[in-house]
Length: 54
Image (cartoon, rainbow, N blue to C red; front, side):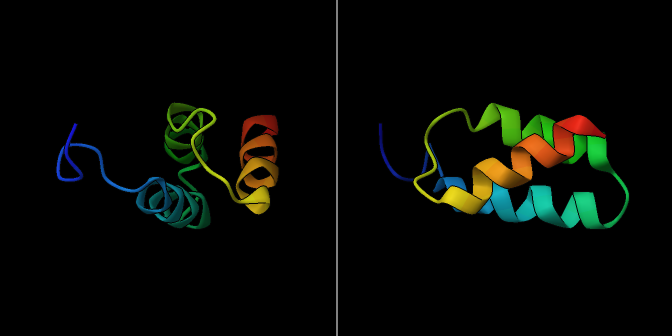
């Protein structure tokens, strides 16, 4: 699979944070969940847990 077909996980993370910050928590949480275990950045997992608890 080429890089154009599967963008880097950080774009989904940043979009999720943006949605969360604009009070669209459910949409941001969906993005975080969709990223699965791909991210290798600890704060992503903290954000995912916090967004799901809302």
